[in-house]
Image (cartoon, rainbow, N blue to C red; front, side, top):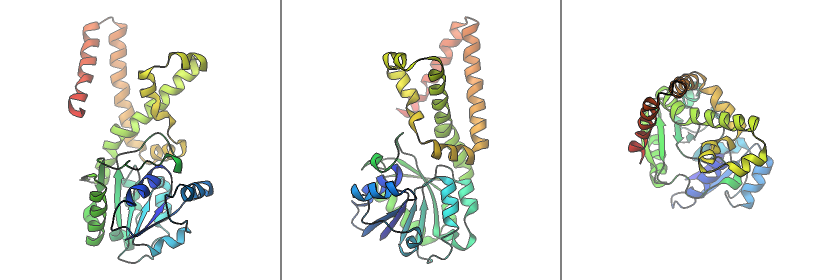
Length: 276
């Protein structure tokens, strides 16, 4: 298979590094709207060459490793691809992407969300094993063509990813709680501290807990504005439920009801009985 990757940042660049290890991948080329990213991707050897976006149609597999709005825009320019081409998007929200796919290429399309990443972005953030042993959610796969189902499963299996299948709407609601809300909270934590403390106090006192909670605040503003917009309703629901939990804890602290505070903390501990 010959592969074209649209978007050469963290996700696209890391994907390129992983695909290079697969014996059934012949060539990997890329394109990016950011010229600096194109240069860096070539310097780092992420792709064999940079191509124009219109040239991706000549490749067997097209990965769209770009923000959600970019995916929706890009697929409108791919309506004349071969029926044997597989398009795989890696967007963090799925419902609006799936609903935007032109009917003529619906079978070409595989809506995927690799549940992985870091707070860094750009080609230099690429990590060789970013996808290894991580979950990939494949949405509405039954609407993809048989060939496209086979190709996508083969690639993700070769990348040693754990495949889960669900509807796009279901995915977006889950993602709001597991991924999108934590990012929103992290940005808010960072802004709260920045508005109260000077940088010297932050550097002197910020220990592991604060660094862990605020790490996500390093994530790309452009990408996460896009994600928040696309999944607005689910995100607002998740934030509201989080606020309810925080208000409950706040009230218990205010009332000196330390037994209930203890119960709140103990209840939160149970999450890691599942995750660990």
